Amino acid sequence: MTKFRAAFLACAAVASLLAATTAGQARGTEADTNYLTFSGPVALPGVELRAGTYIFERALPNGDPSLVRVLSRDRRQIFLTAFTNTVRRPESMGAGQVVSLGETTKGVPPPITAWYPLDSSTGHQFLYNR
Image (cartoon, rainbow, N blue to C red; front, side):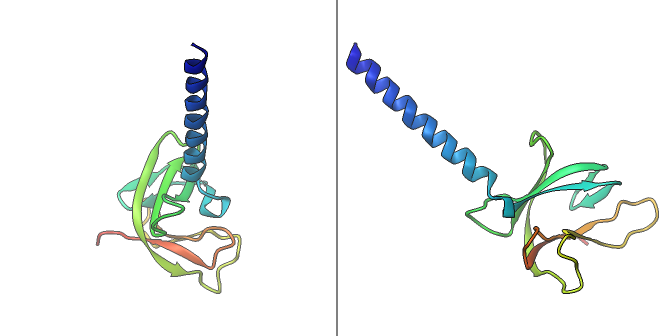
């Protein structure tokens, strides 16, 4: 019975370690994740975000750098997972500015054209259907 219990505890310890490692990798690094707060509605391809705080992150921190995910602040709802084009941060854009907005007509939320993670010289341009 003692050998069984020792084997069970060893397996449980390995499973816990693997789960913790996977969860840490899924979250990415701070450089891959930004919490963005909008005072009014904005748009992304196929979705409108109401005023509030959202998480913008690379969906696969160790994988395809063009895949971006946008989630609710509590990570319970995914609003967008999409491929993007990599673009250089415009020299005129301040280091603290992390999104660029496109033009729109009155009453229509402005589209987020690109997300530039903090302290990054490159960003992610969202792809809209025309």
